[in-house]
Length: 382
Image (cartoon, rainbow, N blue to C red; front, side, top):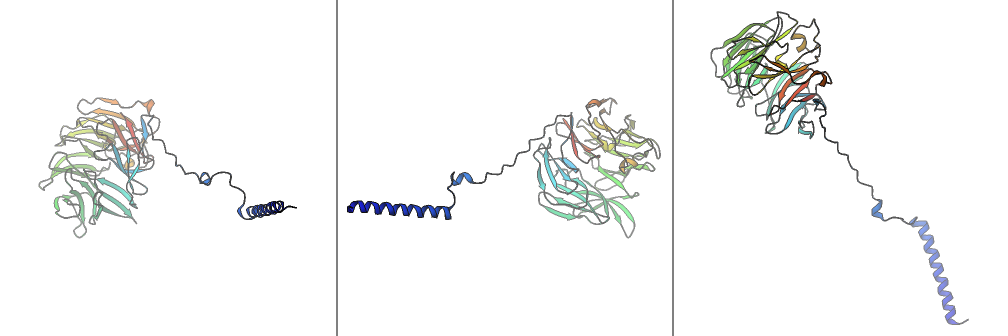
């Protein structure tokens, strides 16, 4: 056998042995051959599906997904801010209920009421824990909180500026007074002595007067009074009605009055007075002031008229104590002519709404309200 043939046979044998060992190595240590490139085996990205925006298909629709407190127009925007009733967080949504975002993530346990300042940047909150009620001032811009002094149980904002009106109970003397001060309690001025335990306070718009009255109770006469904001002689504007409540128009020239038809009565009536308490006129609409909102023209109102009121219900007591819910219809009332028109026909009202806290958008094309039945915020396109 030639040398060249021996070399060829040796080389071939060595190659076969090498390939055998290479195959054994791949089988034992490297596993099966990859069939696709490594980068194609990466886990796919998780895509969170976008929730389609809500689109109103009915005249009345819920725009919040939870019970709310103190919904209000956000200043200079087509949006609404509200406190979530269950958590106390503050959210902002658009008029369709879309674009929900957190305005304040702070939880407020025991939140029972919220009063926004005129500029919508500050609030007075009412918190009740262990049966005790406490008020706090909070600035959403400066993120600053100040507790309101004890023995205060009713507060209202001054129409302009950052001052507050409040009813104060002096434990030592057992006297009740109406005062005005800065939210931190400084620069306070006593305005009037108060004869009643529970009152409502509202500054008369575009005036230097603040009005106050004992909270509506069908068994007690309601006395509406006013006093100058800078202090001075108080004046009785109206008395003689039972269970009365009031709502001033935007320029302070008139106020609507809801009142019982008699002492301990079972029916409610809506009337109107001028700024001095005169020119009392019944508007022939059985509803509550809390179910109305004034239009900018200071003449017309949007009101809801309660239905399904139990015949034996004491009004407004049983309603205010939430012993029942109403099924409302929606009306526009001209307070000068007395003309009344439905703003939505009965066949277009698909549910039952116990409307309260009514307010309008800037051009008065949308009516917002809270439905006491489920606590949610609703809109009615006008």
